[in-house]
Image 1 (spheres, rainbow, N blue to C red):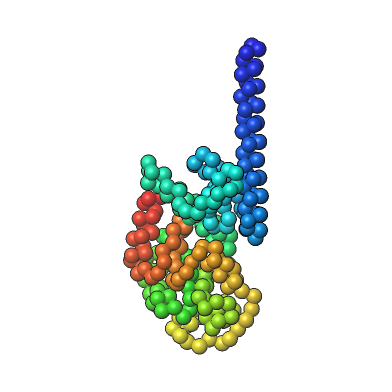
Image 2 (cartoon, one colour):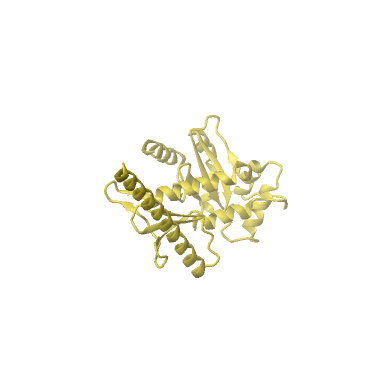
Amino acid sequence: MNNVFKIVCFCVLGAVGGIKSLHADETAIRQALVKSMPNLKIDSINLSEIKGLYEVTVGVNIYYVSENGKYLLPGQLIDLATSKDLTKVKLNAARQLAISKLGQSKMIVFKPKISKHMVTIFTDIDCGYCRKLHSEIDQYLAEGITIQYLFFPRAGKGSESYNKAVSVWCSDDRNAALTAAKKDQTLPVKTCENPIDEHMQLVNDFRLDGTPTIVSENGNVYPGYLPAKQLFLTLEQEKAQK
């Protein structure tokens, strides 16, 4: 009985020691990161699949840091046995969460009668391919694809494209106003409380650099224009692989 008791105690103490070590490593990593990058907002620090390497989540970005906080590795972590990109899976989940937190009340949404898929599209009113995509909005709806629009005026805040986005948002009928703006029709200049800056923050968080950019429900990013049928088939493939 005494031997059993000693073994149990040894295991418990070992586990406690491991927990203390884990917390110590997290503390060392956090202190090192804050010291070198004071403005960095760390969301979480967790052990990665590799011993001695920690996964640090910052918004919708993931970094890998040594347990002593001395080395930082940007990049993808891939399971060679399964060819699975482990980093991508987590980044996709982070994008999904960020879009969900924003909510449809801060988007311009075009809904089909029966929705089979949903995508979020970052759009610039003055972008040629964005206009082409929107001119085919009925084709996307016919495929059962719900379109959630977020604004990405590439010329930046205060630009003509930015101001157009604000006018669209402040219109009585945002969907109709967006369609008119995409056709290069002049809209009444309006201002109101709007989420355009929040859209642009997601652009920065997602590290997007072009429009249109399509983000699927699974968090996958597709830069550029995709015809309705091709987008539907792509989303169907995603669904089958999930």
